[in-house]
Image 1 (cartoon, rainbow, N blue to C red):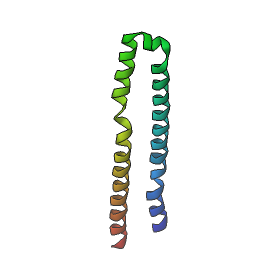
Image 2 (spheres, rainbow, N blue to C red; image 1 turned 60 degrees about the vertical axis):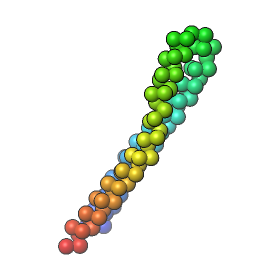
Image 3 (cartoon, helix red, strand yellow; image 1 turned 90 degrees about the vertical axis):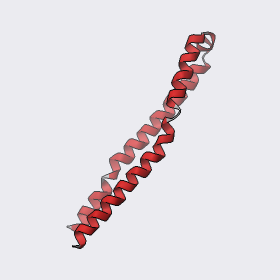
Image 4 (cartoon, rainbow, N blue to C red; image 1 turned 60 degrees about the horizontal axis):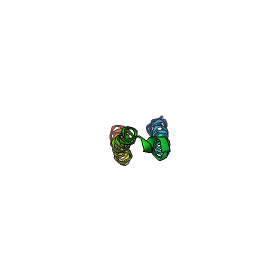
Length: 91
């Protein structure tokens, strides 16, 4: 019975890992789309479109930097949860 609870603690990470991978892939695709749009000759000819693309790229540049922080926080929460679970099961 105790083994199943420990396994359940670890398996709770699977949806989180999958969602982080999906977010990473979506960010890569979004940045590729931004670069292709910025390289488009119609966009480079229009100063408003160029400024808009640059503003969007600058706004999204910080997002990939947050992913490692999110991963560290989740791992820390998992470790705290496992320690508290092991303390309760030891009593």
